[in-house]
Amino acid sequence: MEEKNYILVTGGAGFIGSHTVVELIKNGKTPVIIDDFRNSSREMLNGIEKIVGSELIFHNIDVSNKNDLAAIFTKYSINGIIHFAADKAVGESVNNPLKYYKNNIGGLINCLECALEFNVENFLFSSSCTVYGDPEGSTTVTEESPQQDANSPYGATKQMGERILSDVVKSGVNLKVLNLRYFNPIGAHESGLIGELPIGRPNNLLPYVTQTAIGILEKLTVFGNTYNTPDGTCIRDYIHVVDLADAHVSGLDWLEKQSNSTFEIVNVGTGRGTSVLEIIHTFEKVSGKQLNWEFGVKRIGDVEQIFADVTKAKNLIHWDAKKSMEDAVRDAWNWEQKLRND
Ligand code: UD1
Image 1 (cartoon, protein in one colour):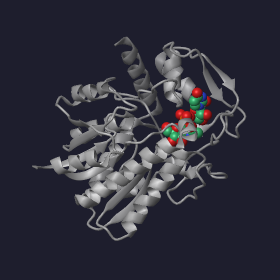
Image 2 (cartoon, protein in one colour; image 1 turned 90 degrees about the horizontal axis):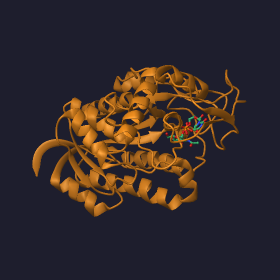
Image 3 (cartoon, rainbow, N blue to C red; image 1 turned 60 degrees about the vertical axis):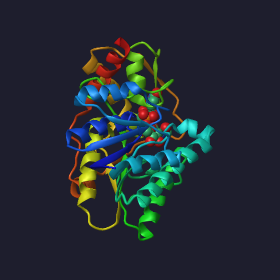
C-alpha cells in the first residue's frame, strides 16, 4: 500500500464532487475519486485535470458494490471520506423509490462499513436542506430547527442517512462525522471547464434558465406567483458551488483536528434568500439577454421560502460563503455557453 494520506471522494465527477476535488487539490490534499458516471461524465474529470494541471486518481466504481469499494481501501491509505455519490431527483425517487433506497442508503452503509473496517476516522456526508421540509412560520433554519417527514423517497434517504451516521457514532466506534446540509447549489467553476450537467430536462432552476437562454428549451415556467413573499415567487438560499466546495475543505480540516468521535451538523448556505424573479433579473443583467419566461401553476411540494442560518458554519468550521449571486449566475452562463460551443 502507498504511504500517503488520501481522501476518498465518492461521486467525485458530479456537480458538487468535481468542484470539491479542485478545491481539495488546491489545498494540498490528494483525492481518490470514484464515480460510475450514472449522472456525470468523464469530461468532468478532463475539466478538473485542466484546472489543476495534474493527473487525477480515478476508479470507475459503483458505491453499492461493497467488494469494489473495499478494494479501494486496500489499495490506498485513506484518511477521510467525502461521500457525495447518491441519486438526487425528487420526482424520479417518487416513481422509483427502491433505486433511491438501494443506492443512497446501501452506498452509505458500504462506505461506513469500509470506514470502520479500514480505520478511517473522518467522514463527511452530503445532506440537504430538504430534511427541514416546510419550515412553516419561520424562514431561516438553524441546525436545531424541527424536521418534518420527508415528502419524497429522496428526502427520506437524506433524513435516514443522517440518522444512520448519528446512530453509528453513538454506538461508540472511532468515527468523526460532519453532516453538511446543502441549500441550493448553483454556478460553475469560473474557468468554464466544469459545471452542472443535467441529464435530460433539468429539474433545478438555474440549468433551466441557462438552457432556455441558449435555446435548448423554449420557455421557463415560474412555478407560482401568489406565495406570501415580496414578489409572490418562492425564495431559496442559492450558494455558489465553489463556496460549497470550500466548505468541504474547511469541514475536513475541522474533522482532522478533532480527537474524539463526534457527529455534527452544519448548514451550508449564504444566509440570504433570493426569489425566482430576482434570479431571472440577475440572469438578464449579467448575460445581456432577455429570457423567455411565464408564470405557471405552483409545483406540488414546493416550500414557500427557506434559507440558512449560517452562524454554526462560521463558528464551528470557520467557513462562510464569499461569492455573490451575480458571480454564480455569470459562471453558470459561461459554463452553459462553453458546453454548447464545444
Ligand atoms: C430541489 C429539491 C430538493 C433538492 C434540491 C437539490 C424539490 C421539491 N426539491 O430543491 O429536495 O435537495 O432541489 O438541488 O424538487 N423553479 C421554477 N421553475 C423551474 C424550476 C424551479 O420556478 O422550472 C423554482 C421552484 O419553484 C423553486 C426554485 O425555482 O422555488 C428552486 O427550485 P429547484 O432548483 O428545483 O430547487 P428546490 O425546489 O429548492
